[in-house]
Every structure is written in C-alpha cells, then in structure tokens.
Length: 121
Image (cartoon, rainbow, N blue to C red; front, side, top):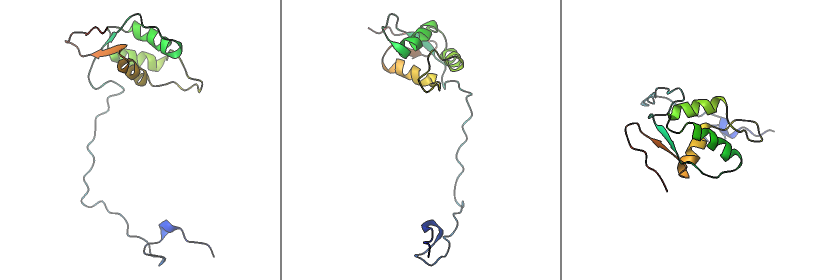
C-alpha cells in the first residue's frame, strides 16, 4: 500500500483535507510605480582618475571614466546595451553591480545635482 502525501491530509491520517486559506482581513500590498530601469534619485558620476585595475575591472573602469561628470542613468543604459566585458558564462552582468563595486571601493561617487563633488585621496 502506498503512503499518502503528507500535504494532502488534514488531521493525522484521517484523509480529510485541510481548510483552504482565506484572504479575509488581508490588505493588498502597496503598488510601487515602475522606474523603467532608472535610479531612484538622479545622480552625476564622479570618477577618480588614474586607478590601476586589471581584467574586467579595467574594462568597466574605462567606460566609467568616459561617463565622468555625466548622469548615472546614461552610464547604466550604455553598459546594459553594450557591456565592456562578459564573464565566461556569456551572460552579461548587471551594470548596477559594477557601479556598486566602484562606489564601495571609492573609485567612483554618485553625486546629487547641485552638490559639490568630494575629491578623495
């Protein structure tokens, strides 16, 4: 005799189905407007010149330097359409991930319009 699926029975081994979940008293999740791939706040790239990198980092840094002083959205759109390097898998990496790495390491900053760019050491 085959065992019954544990999820198909209600109370222990009676074979009764568990009561269906209801949505009474639940509140719908708020909807968030789509940003169409644009950053939440507009920003301008500030890139530190003369940083020595190798491999994919150097390729992405070269493109990042071309967008120094330009909007972040322009950099993200250009690199999403034509990434400077691809990993062995052949699947393009997200440009936001690379931008995050460059900002965490201090190579680049995203400066809000109207504020002064801070030069790092």
